[in-house]
Structure formats: structure tokens, C-alpha cells
Amino acid sequence: MSVQLISAKEIPLYMDGTTVLVDMRKREEYETYHFPGAISCPYHDYEEWLRSLPESRAYILYCDRGNMSLYAAKRLDREGKKVFTVAGGAEGWKRRGTKLRENN
Image 1 (cartoon, rainbow, N blue to C red):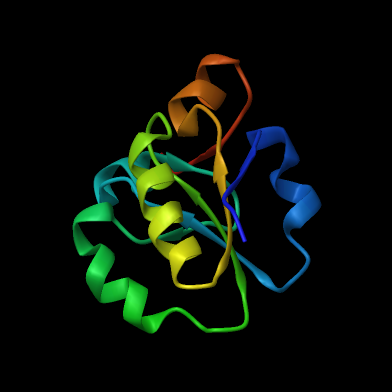
Image 2: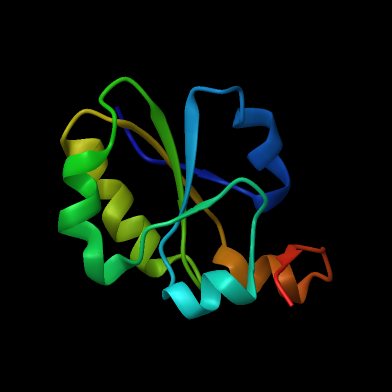
């Protein structure tokens, strides 16, 4: 297996009911805006939520700019999980002017 890099625009193509979309940013950032359907699993809690992930799912990880989610995705990949990471993260997608879920 290997980590696949996808664009934020491609996320809906993978959301088939078996994929978990994981926002790795701080909870405050998640609460401000996030991709629809994403769950909040901050990077600093990585070890904790890693243990609770279902075995037979695929995962799409994203963070602010894509660095921390890529690191975490590589760890998940080494454990045999199917994993994707979002190029540019949430900030890259937001800069392109695409609407994320705003929680204001």
C-alpha cells in the first residue's frame, strides 16, 4: 500500500460510506470551518484516536497545509490501512475560494 495524495475537490469521489474523513487540525480550527462530513481528530491526540479507528475502513486525512496529515497518513499506511491525504490541506482549499462548512 501507499499513501495517495488527492485534491480537496476529489474528496466526494471517495466518500462512499466506507471512508472516514479526518480533520487533524486543532478543535478550534475544526469548529471554525471544515470539510462536510469530517470528524475532528486533532494531531496532538493522534495516538488516542488511532487506537479507536475501525480496521476495515479507508481514511482521508487533512490538516492546515498537508504536512502533519501526510506524516500521520504514512504511519497509518505502515499499519496496513488504506489512506489518502489532501494536497494543500484545508488552507490550500480555502485559499482557492471554495466553500467549506462554516460554523459561525
